[in-house]
Structure formats: structure tokens, C-alpha cells
Image (cartoon, rainbow, N blue to C red; front, side, top):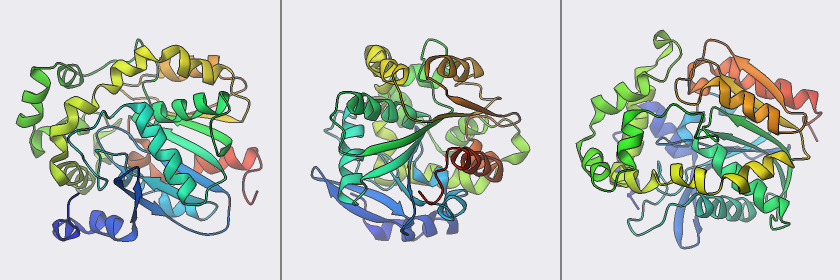
Length: 304
């Protein structure tokens, strides 16, 4: 685990995010989380790849006006532990998430996943369907995730990272400028990019030499194929309110994925953010948060 002193040189927003968080020991590993506290209904946020819970820093306080909001860094990401000898299976990431929530006293909650986090959510739902989830799920929101890998338009770097030889080579070669250029291409409107966010996400990845784990973590793409029936099956049988919240200009998790999810999940509500790309919570935080609050207002979640 990287020591706290390593974070003192971070830009203000990332340092503030780090300072407002805490850590819990889960299955022998340190997991970083931010918990807004408060007595309201709980909203659990699951971030994407290769970033961290900082993805939500622009919407966190707005959502916390109506919810107790909890966001954590998956193992291998951000400020959580980055063990070298670890599977980084989505199954284990879900196990860690559920155990963290249990340790924080969460008994029932609304769950939201973005990108990689959408697959963690689907594994949580698969456990729920089998009666193995100790938490009551009240609603689900999925945002810009390539759950249907056959429909996704993976970038060359994503495909290379999956290769057993080329993947580690690329991870060693990646630098700040390359990383920022790759993320910048995912915005719907480049004029909305805040360079400080890109710098912060790079530094969070670099903490604990996290970029060297990218090839191993990229195995989640293969799991999306291997466990497709388990995860899509859980969505097809979902019996709680569901929200598909999508940046329409996403070049990877393209609109066809959102449309497929709406076709599979009973009574799912679809909200398009027309001008946004893959990171709508950073590109248009007010609109993204407003869409979430509108959905929860419609299902009567506020103050429940």
C-alpha cells in the first residue's frame, strides 16, 4: 500500500478527495472509500477502468444532498491496495465491494456502476438472484459500460493490454501524455475537458505503480464473455427499478449497448446525455447528477 506521504504532492482536487476518504481492511487488503455519511437512503457508486472513485468527485456532493453516498476504489485502482499477486477477477471485485458495504453497515441500497463498474454490478445482481447477497438492492443504474463486449468498439490499447506479451510491454511504455491523450479521445466534446482531472486520474493510476497491473486487470474483458449468461441473465430477471444513463457520443460503450440493455431489463428507463461521451460524470456533472436524481425522484427513492 502506498503511504499517505506519497499523496502530498497531488493537485488540490485529488488531494482533497484523498483526505476526505478512509480505508477499511477487507479480506486482508486495504480498500479506500469515501462515505458522505448521513441518515438518508444509500447510493453506492462503482467506478470504471483504468480510473478510480475520483471519477465521481464532481457529482458526489450533489448526490449527497439526497443520499448517503459511498464510493470506493476497486483493488488495483486509485488509493486502494495494488497487490501484485492477485487475480483481479470481477468476481473478487464484487466480493470485496459487498464485504466493504457490509462492514459499513449498509443493509439496503441503490447501486450505480460506470464502465468496469457495470460488470461488478452485474455480478452483485447475479448473487442476488441466487439468494447470496446480504444487501437489499433497491434500484440499479448502469452508465456507459461495455457489458455487451460484442457490441463495444474497443481501442487498440485495450486489445494490446489483453495480450500476454504485448500487454506488459505497453504498461511499461505508458506515460502521462499517452494516458491523457487516450482519455481525452473519450470525451464527447473536447472543450469540456478539465486537464486537472486528467492529471489527477493519471497520478491515481501511478500511485503504487498501478499501471503495471493494467494487463492483469484487463482480463475483465475476457470475463465479460465467459460469464455473459450469468450476468445478462441476472439483468433479464431484474425485478427492481433500473436506469440506463448513457453519454450518446461514447466511442467505446456505444449507444447500441444501452439499447440492448433496455431491451433486456424489464421496464428499464433510458436517459440519453446527447452531447456526452464515456465519462459523463466529468463532462457534464450537473446533467448527470440531475438525471440520477430525477430517476430516483420518479421511483420515490428520496428519503426512503
